[in-house]
Length: 146
Image 1 (cartoon, helix red, strand yellow):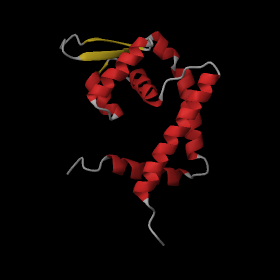
Image 2 (image 1 turned 45 degrees about the vertical axis):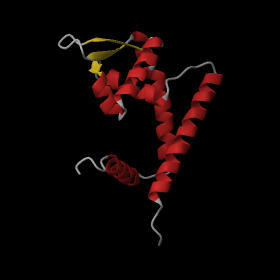
Image 3 (image 1 turned 90 degrees about the vertical axis):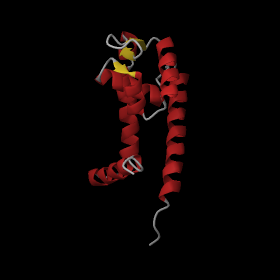
Image 4 (image 1 turned 180 degrees about the vertical axis):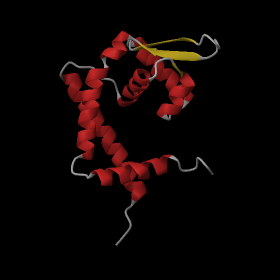
């Protein structure tokens, strides 16, 4: 039996998932909603779990470059979903806080994420999903210890 073309499949799956998520966002927009993008949602989830994180912590948790985080925070601040201010201990460090408007995004975001996860996991057993998750974590850590 031929081995699966994992690099191709992973790249293709990523592109298809992004296309599907963009189509879901476009559908929501047609219904008059303006849901957070996947990366915006990721930041809202981080802040809902631990408010007041630093820009560097956000970059690490979202696996983004610091410059990308700066733009992301700036756009979300303009939407009124979060605020940032200098750290009390080190004024050079910015901390990011969830606003009430950002917190108001969470119920719909949780519902949308539940829908996405349901579609992604349908027809797979728990054991299969654990194997996929373990493999993806393995891929994430390539080169970390080298």
